[in-house]
Amino acid sequence: MILPTAFTDNMRQTLSVTDYPDFIHALSLPAPTSIRIHPVKYNNEHPEKKVDWCHLGYYLTKRPKFTLDPAFHTGSYYVQEASSMFLCHVLKQITFRKETLRILDLCAAPGGKSTLIASWLNNDGLLVSNEVIKNRAYTLKYNILKEGYSNVLVTNNDPADFGKLENYFDIILVDAPCSGEGMFRKDPDAVSHWSPENVEKCSSRQKKILADVLPALKDEGHIIYATCTYNDAENIDNIEWCTKTFDLISVPIETDPSWHIIEIQRKNKYGYQFYPHKLDGEGFFISLMHKNKESKSTDHRNKSYVNSLQHLSKKQETGMKHWVSSEQITFLTDKMGTVHAINSDLKDEVQWLNHYLRLIYCGTSAGVFNKDIFKPDHSLALSLISSKDLISFELSEKDALLFLKKELQYVDTPQTSWIRVTYQGAGLGWIKNLGNRINNYLPAEHRILMKLEEE
Ligand code: SAM
Image (tube, rainbow, N blue to C red):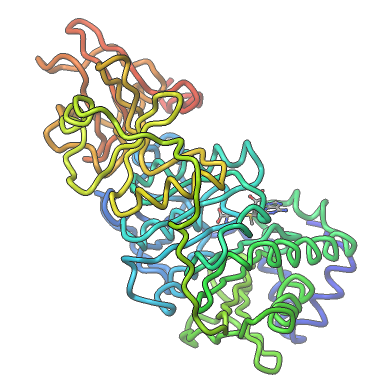
């Protein structure tokens, strides 16, 4: 890997004489592979080596072909770089009370941190997971639906759109688009896009993103700022700028010295830097700030808005009991007839948020009614709310892969009609058993195209 001179000069200044060669050497080594397991869905042996700062994180000894593991498609784990799992530790430091939390993940695609937050919330509170770039927002939606919770909304908005939700979120995560220095080892393309001018451009864009979203932070809320880069302009300088410009104070994060995370301190501003030569993970920066303003309450429910999500008819509502067993779910339907299943305590807020934001996924997409006949959505099969009384059929690894390739022809069961197929106990999708053959309802866009090993 040929590194830009301006980058190496900067790193030489940042690191000590002994650290610098170690850092350069680490960039020539393969990046470790790590996964974060789903607290409810994962039903396999836990890998041996744990990630120190995240109780759900594990290192794998080699990188498998994840596409060819059906458990990857059920959402039983998420492949996530270990340093960024530190978010789990930061969330635990902020609070243990999750029930009423409103969290925004502003720059969320592909969904590593949002799926971590969803797991941590474990269906309490609300997570709004946002991505401004449309096609990336759809990738995010897919990863969120695999998590299977009913307290997450996926939106496709510009940061400035959140300014209207004044004083609303308890926690905002800004995992900002950056120059990607910490990804050089994993993504050599990042090297070719790097330049000192781009670092400056990123730094200005990050300030604009922060300024745009800050009105949406509650008066006593927390903002978590993260990048996957090393330079000060995108990291500690931005923290200093935030604390000078807004009512924010920088908050230190407790770390264990054995984790080898470097604390950057500038006066009373704190940032935490992850280096690949110090720990098993990629380059990453994270910092926590607290809004230092006397709390005033804003009652968002008093604002008028158009309700574009409607309740189901009584008959449809009753019909849904067959598919969803939870009592704590409210069903809302949109103009297209899609039924969204959302935790009942969120139903009014969701209506209100839908007025201000471009919602592309809401709780769990349960399915659609055609007159009174219900067709379940793929998301419902992968969700944690699908009824335990539904007919399900456990597939072997081979059949699960054939299902994912849309080549499974037959399942050996006398049960006909809708069947939720599972792998290692977790939902994989829907089939309709017609006796001598099946219909496979896996959405075409989720079909795997990779050749199976024995083909
Ligand atoms: N949080 C994600 C995760 O853990 O999987 C990674 C986020 S990535 C570092 C930054 C994201 O910001 C990208 O998805 C990118 O599309 C988005 N982005 C780019 N420009 C943006 C802007 N001006 N405002 C907000 N987000 C932006």
